[in-house]
Image 1 (cartoon, one colour):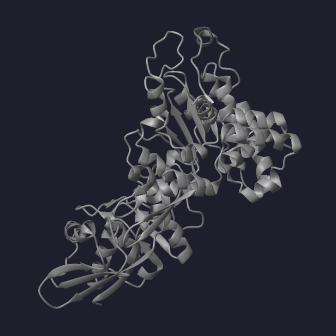
Image 2 (spheres, rainbow, N blue to C red):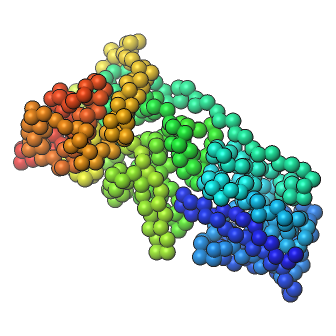
Image 3 (cartoon, rainbow, N blue to C red):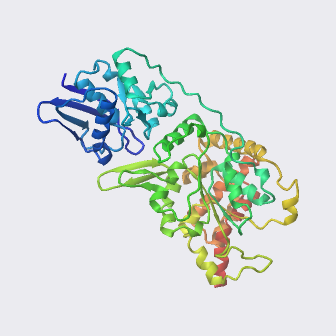
Length: 508
């Protein structure tokens, strides 16, 4: 037989489209050519495949070999096609039987010794392979990751010789079963470790209960980063579908997915020098950025005004829609980005505005320019602006200064979320304007208070709606069926930057 057909999977955004690897042997000058829009890494596979087959004691056919990766208009990248190309050559030259190849799909990179190396996106490949009704054969290092997909038949091997022995029927490969590890306890710290800052802890609990975005403002060393890192300790456990989505996105990232992080909410904290592409994703072959890698988790932006303004502005659409579409001239890629934004900033360029020791020497104009780095549309999308002041030394030395731990707060958060899901099928932060009128109705007193706040603070319609959502979350935490003036007043109080902007305008 001079023609062999092998099934494999490419990686296109969050999809793993089927690639049919056709290998044909013909008479002519010896050579190997790969067609079907391969990138450089795929073209180089001919050298890896030749060396791997020879070192595994197979015969490399001294004939004209043509490898077609169909469909021809789908870009192919990475070393994932090494294994199917090698098996296709062996099957076309009659060195292995081809009668079982149509029952499997193959992905894997070959070492020159014939060993199999891991690839990116094994989870997505397993999902699509399961839907196609075929088993997936891949490197052993990817087996645990692929086996996370329920009902997927995953076979693994460390070397191409093991796969060839399986196809000949001389050995058996049993379906791989993944033992899912327990979520590590205390992985996110505990709220009790943060001394003082009860007002900020209250805002953190509200943010966790309703899925709201939070901005913390305060001088250096007051616990902003500690609070952000402990948000995960009061969030409810991930569902299986959420954990699978998060793991699948991590698997196509540069660092891959680690089984030890299964069902742990991602916490991404990019440096303020990160580019827009690093944040939202991109590249010639689009890959997910920080906002997608934080899917169902937390994106923490420390020193928020130090980020380039153009970088921050790209967050505006994903914060509203929960996904990001990356467009290129020839293709588009869409990645989910349902993350919770937690940001921190200093009150002024030096960070010590209002310090009792008089360390701040920033002028009013410098402070205004510093805060103007954050645009109004971006601040509108951040529901809670909370001050994190300096903690007195007495509180730092108080053994009881931390207050209740994360366990109690987590129970309140889960109870509030259960109410929201039972009422509207979604968290409060995701309510549409139409749904606000249905699930967040207010009486005359609350409506009058909100109207007064809009007029005095000059709030936009978006900020107004977000105040109502926060008030609804506060009411859920208080187990109140309706929004009262107390809930609305607390929600308005969390628009700190809006209040300061209104005060600045009135002074002018």
